[in-house]
Length: 74
Image (cartoon, rainbow, N blue to C red; front, side):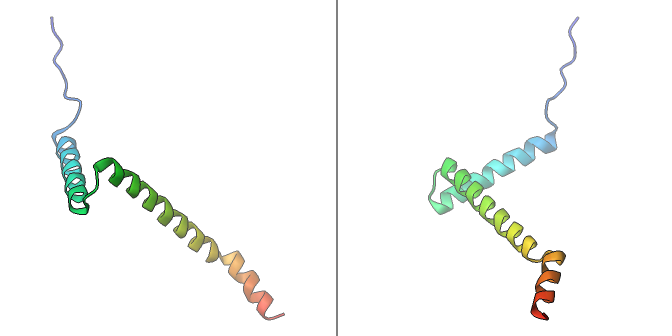
């Protein structure tokens, strides 16, 4: 007696994975970079943008802005 095999991925997931791979390949070719270098560069850019957003959020913290405003009027 054999069990029916269930697909491990849905067709939508398979198509989206294929499209992401195609987009990565096309971007790597247009930038004339190997794909591993494109992935590493993308990770570095993401990390830098994330850090800049954190710094901006910290500078707009309401408690910090209140302290600065009170310091100006002293």
